[in-house]
Length: 379
Image 1: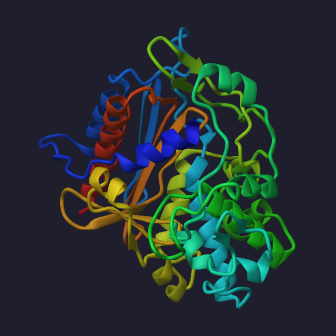
Image 2: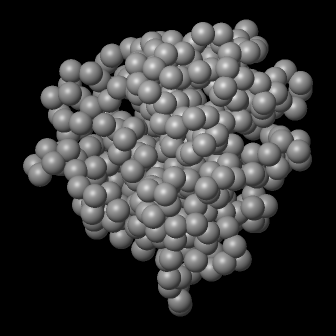
């Protein structure tokens, strides 16, 4: 299941990456990209933007297996769960305008939608949805085998259908009494945005975030199963000998997750957010108020904490950074930006090695090292 792999990747991040000495940041970026490719990952593209605006770019591997075609440095990839930060930004903008409150319950906006098997929308707040403390189960469909991929890749679900699937399961815990990553919770947030504004979430993201920042290479693709060109083909490793090209698919939550972007646009978005260009100071401070993650995730993700659609992570050189990883449809992306928004890095990999825990961990650690090195160069 692509979304499950993405969450496990997020959970397996390492936090102690030794910073190599005696090499320039650009050379180190190339070395780190090559190290990711050396794990067997088909394609890698990375971009770092320094405080003075200078950009360093590195690619490794191939855009399509068997062709030798290089990975495009400006290639599109599926944004996946990094779009949760876009959703959270819109919610906090609406809160700043008085359009909603973080303490509003789900039932205030969507009466009766979160109900059944012990789920109770009258007890779940918008803040809890944003920080994954709602207890709403993560019931999104997905695939775990090549056969399931080919059977399900073009299935289309509406937000109401996805939430109804989750309501067939008991909550993970009472609202506010735990932490568990919930894609379903962000589906509910998208529905609340539409109810509060009269427009779908993707339109609000476009009007409020993308156009003001000039992010014309971040696009909502809806129910299209393809990506704009150029892009690397995306692969997923399901098991020994079962590497499958999974580029052709419709994201399961197409309303919120059908975003494609580039390393340039993702850098610009994260920098603008942390620099205070998208949210007033009070709302940005709210976004950066973090809670502990679950004990299971904390064991694999030392020092990581979750805010409102943002993850706070420690740097090996001291200090912290902000990020939100994404993984879906074979594309796995890590990113990071310093607290002042001045140094940022994004690495996108066009293969998900989800067949074994050790492969997931090695992929995450290699990509995490690239982000850590890139951000420590600015400190």
